[in-house]
Length: 312
Image (cartoon, rainbow, N blue to C red):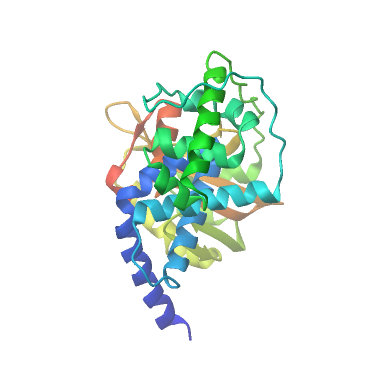
């Protein structure tokens, strides 16, 4: 009964992705700076795209797409902090005049410090102005405030940033990997290019989230769709290397190809959730272009099939 509606919505979704594609990398970078985690950035991007598409149906005036996306991402992030309040630490500082000369910002090196000493609105204003060069008038519209308040936020934020320079950020703790027989079977399935072996550990009602592309419900649908597509791709590749690694605080299955040149090329990242001996939830990120680029850099490998990651 919903087939026609689903087809219509998929067509709208494809048109929307084409419209936002020029801004998707900037949106991801912004979400990364907000959340300070590649995984959380990817989640915030997805939430932003879902909400921005849904809200378009309720709007009667044209929007500037980049500002529109950044506005939704900003407010989603601020709303999360309103639901989970945190204390802004006081900081004795000398408030210097806010000059228009640009800073040599190393924002990513000081996010934790800035988050501890800035309010959400100050933090968002700083990122939008310094990292993404939005004007104060544009920022005011994004976070529903006045230009004067934005300038005040920026003066405070820039002063705090001067204090942050020279301070060391805390390192991320290293966690121990916990493997099990189910994941070992999954790894062998990848390495042997064997979809049947992979299917053997999937729960009958497994949920498979192909981020930015679609969701599959159940083992049969996964076998007939995404695993069938995966098999066609890996059969054209050389040696498949699959490993269980810790990446940015999460345990992930990393799927790579070792080409004839001897180098490793990242194919996909998989997050697997199991109950008992079965996979109940499977998320993979081959279409998450910016996350994949960041992961390849982190693991010091190359990135495979770059054109594959853009979904229209």
